[in-house]
Length: 482
Ligand code: BG6
Image (cartoon, rainbow, N blue to C red):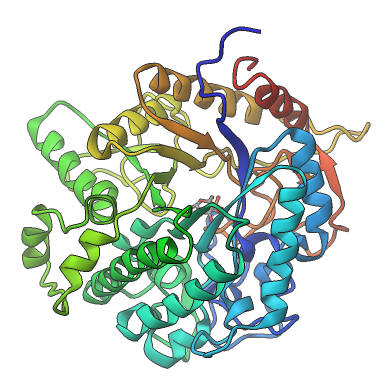
């Protein structure tokens, strides 16, 4: 076999989030999370946020793909593909149902004991996202979640419970999924638990927005993340804690200097701000003017700056799906995006959900982030959301997905040849699950098909897609046979 470009201990695997795959939304003492109050939706028809649950509505987070009950079968299939790592989240509301309890829920802790043990049985390294759009809705009601500084303590209680319980079994942790989703209004509820109207339904894609709350909330999250890094090391010096951001690769639409500057400004706020704080340990200088221009005042407490400085992350992780362009032209039409938008790039094609496919953007992302932070990187989400069909003979020929992943892995290897230190790759939704932005089953990412549909039919059976065997070979050859 050819000498591989990627390191020998490269962490190949896949990623999921509890709220999108577990289901079992109210069993074994679990509380309601912010995802549980979001209804189903579809492309072009936003899901709704319903603070008062409506029994006649469809809540995909309630059932996910039943991973809570079928995790052994799922992990066995991951092991069959040769996974070295499995990225999943612990659902905060299984451990602290309302968020403000003093003692953790033993049934919740026990469930993740079993999930972790099942991974270890196959030599799969767990990579745990501590908070992936699963803030206890009880905390939204109690204090509007991260708007309040009290959240730092609630979050740290949760971290202490899981850092202590899984010591010696887990090595890699990520504090907040896609923390920079909160620089856009759409991140307010999912990422921060912030909800302005607690009485009436809100359209998910059109959440009323108070930027002051989002940025103050982010400050509290930065402090909490830094204190969690510190706590992790005190509990187990072998723990490695990473951030997790959306990398929204962005190019100037033209070489007009105004477009170049617009793109630079976009990158600072959307791509760099949060990771600058989490990896460099301080607010970047450019935020001062941004806050002044936008009438935002960050309330800090004495000692916060030191906390940020002392709690920087060990490695940088990100999701990468697509790229977009920026222009200074106020009339340019904004395209679709994974939370963070932009203008369509005329050189690229888009997925059925309007996300522009750009493998080279991943190479750019890796080089850009490594230039800036000089920390080990990991691509913890990437993939193609697509409609899959089961053929008459039972096969699912997702060549389009193989093509997408192959091209991205090729670019990832190019970045490594350039000298980027890349730890691993966990494509998103390695088993089909519910989409986060549109709340539907139809948008599938997996190597494993789940027979469940948006009309409520389907028996949750697992079927291997063509990409299953393809990815198995990719892992076996350490990325050489693509
Ligand atoms: C990321 C999230 O934004 O993208 C995941 O971390 C999400 O939770 C993924 O599922 C893909 O987005 P979507 O909307 O296609 O599910």
